[in-house]
Image: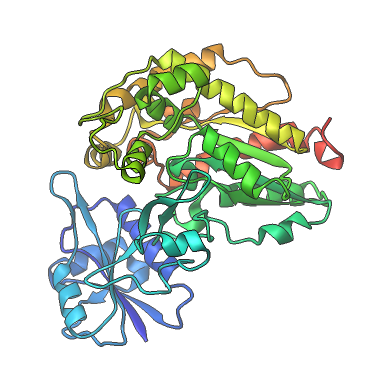
Length: 445
């Protein structure tokens, strides 16, 4: 069996995007007992052969076979947006082949077919998965907040996290086996990166390489508990649900953007009286549950409007994050306070990055998402942490990082070069605060 990957007819697609899509094809079909054949329409065959000489790009076949899956690489143009050689997909579908397309992030999705049972990962793993819509992405009910499913970019566990390890087994680990648990929203989930490109996977590699270089009898496993839409209060719930018995040695809270944005949108009484930030769209769930659609939500029309002052939002964010740190320390872990990057803080950007930001921008929140840069500036100027808490300012580091590279894929989600920098920043902080100080030799004080 051969998997055929079809390059698009448009040749304006930036090389960075094509490389990520090629990596997506290689990654998703690495475990298939098949060969990969990259093909292109005759008109653009010389172009792709020159760009990817190692792929031995062949012409698109005249006929497709039912037992040869076909994957369409999507093109991207700053003006025309996304496209693919749909003609090949249609012909392959008519021949009975399994057809898919691969997005600019490397995410593979079905084309002219339903998701297969194997692609719908863990759909029947628990009752809340079974009761949820059988859809490849979206929020669904869970008694403690919500869960989110996002398929096609890599393996997820039964609760939607990008974790392939057994948590009960890790809870029984040896003393020299340390666990780093990383929390955050969809940017922490690394939704524009393949599994091996996530900052958590790269962080694990860096920490273990450091231990090997220093000949330390020590190894690390890094887990990604990030989840779409999560604010700090969700992170605390996830920690108590999934990490209390695991007792991670280090917790990285990589966040800020969701609290800053949702905090400007949510009910001022809930924020002002209780320092609670929540996802505004969850008010819609209350309308459905209680049949109160006649009562307007806090955000009753589009575009959304900011109703809470940024400084008030920051107060609630900082309070809840300090609370998270206290919970982690009470359970014997070290807390790392991370501030995630936002595209609005970026000083310079490549033409490709600027184009993707225009195409992928959420226009409903764009007016006050621009406030995040100023909010982060206020936070870093006013935040006072004790020496026991490393502060990793990923936003400041990313603002000037590699202006010629494709770092952001939209307002907040990073492409692989961005996640690579996150891994470097967090590795440096953990080496300095944990390994260099020998804190791994005994319990934290």
